Length: 161
Image (cartoon, rainbow, N blue to C red; front, side):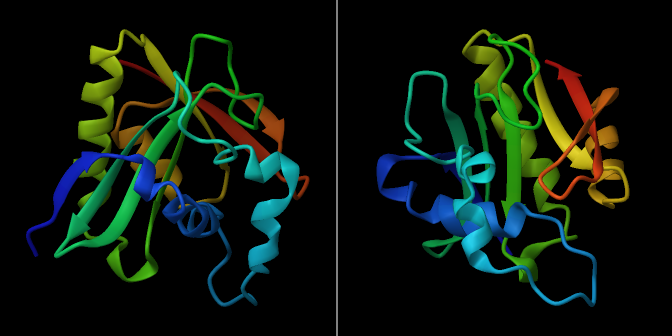
């Protein structure tokens, strides 16, 4: 496998619906959540009208197929910290998870965010989501707790760039 990473472009924006759906953590073995869930306003905000001045993202692809995406926005969502801190979303198609690709994708996104002058990035993650370990390895630290769309307690995490 020899994937490439590039900045997201306008023709990629429709792909964000798929990646947003795959970004919603689900317990293994449970019935898959309905795809319509992404159109709930508190979730759809992560991609609605993507492409604004503060929106930033990267796509990992191989042979023209998008394998994963990571993007940030300054939006009033679950991981919102303030008006200067972009909130992260990251997702891979299920068959490309747990292969070390996320670290590569995030390293590229962090470099772009730093170049744009951002000092930090935030995210929201359910406490029992295994991705918490991934985020900690990347340098994210827990700064608070907030309820999510399913009334679970999420951690608000922040990474200094």
